[in-house]
Length: 465
Ligand SMILES: NC(=O)C1=CN([C@@H]2O[C@H](COP(=O)(O)OP(=O)(O)OC[C@H]3O[C@@H](n4cnc5c(N)ncnc54)[C@H](O)[C@@H]3O)[C@@H](O)[C@H]2O)[C@@H](O)CC1
Ligand SMILES: [K+]
Image (cartoon, rainbow, N blue to C red; front, side, top):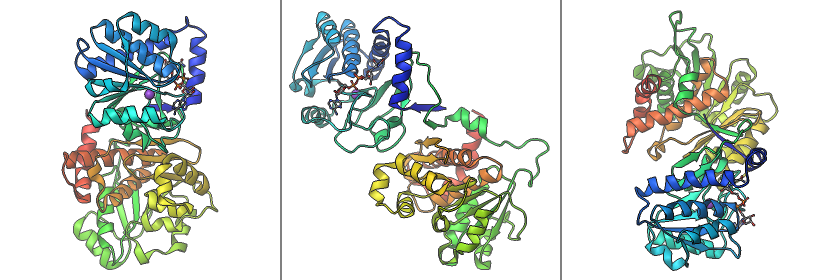
């Protein structure tokens, strides 16, 4: 599991560790890891022109001490001071090994710019001279390595209300921060490299599944499994307006871990579903979970859906099904999967507000509707009513295609029917959906059905690495 902690949690862990170590130890650990990451990024240190953008705090200190190490290995290191004060000892040490203080003019000729403007002590946004220095690097295509976080982003929320650094690599210390996992800030980090500095951390505020977590959570069938014990999903989807959505959601569910799907809907649509997927049963019977909403259109029967929400079996609500969600009941087993526009409608805010503050609104909705909420997007944010958050950011942008949400709904429904909690079903669903999309796409266009078709192979690759 990749874990991200809040600034407050990091500060507390740092304070307790620092109390037990000689002064400056943590900064030296951070600087050593940073210097190694920068020389790996450049492929060398000797002869490289390194420009450090230095703010007033310890983030600048990390950059200065990394500069010391790079200068000792033959790099030409220049510090550009963006504040009246800089980490004094760090700057002295840099000058002592032949580094120099320069001006923004040095940026254009640099091989790399190191962003030590602000770290976890920074407020969002950049001051004008810092913003100008960053723009200079961007306009000359000089790559930027961010120290801890890309300066200017909101570290605890992933929001980017003002100018900020867009890094080619972010080197962070101790643990991931929330901005590394949540968009729009996550997209400004580039790959994130974690340097262990020995922090002892509490439970994470935001997590992100890795391959090993998927393997541990996946309900793999065993010798005694039969099609019923593996889970039966009821699918209430599609309409004469949108019959395709039912076909696609079914394809998504069939790529999941369950044994059987019962389709409920208009006869004409059921016939299309069966024509595409002869495995599907269109007779009513017991199910372990419901997937409701994909392409329901005018067929949405709100009282009927609310009855399902009241019942014991977990329900995933997608697309039109979301219109049946109300904030009056206990929806512990309910998983809602809106995109930003749908979540905006549910909460009565603008879509752009949800997009700018994704974590906040996913959490808000989980609390208000007492349900697990999966907010779709380039990074998917999944918030449970108890405050747990999981994030998935491994999807190709090619996945933004019609019907992809129907595949996800079917797949998450299958995990619910297999007995996973709403949070696990959503995070596993999002992870495998993205993995299948990456496999099907291979950096080219994909259709929703090709994503569903790639689910078995993506699952196989993950389960048998
Ligand atoms: N505390 C520790 O034990 C460690 C901290 N480390 C580094 O220290 C960083 C935190 O250092 P600090 O607490 O000194 O804080 P920062 O270096 O993040 O920020 C320093 C100061 O910048 C000013 N500032 C805030 N927002 C600004 C903005 N938008 N533009 C310009 N100036 C702004 C404020 O006066 C703030 O106190 C971490 O991100 C990490 O890089 C590492 O050395 C590892 C150990
Ligand atoms: K930084």
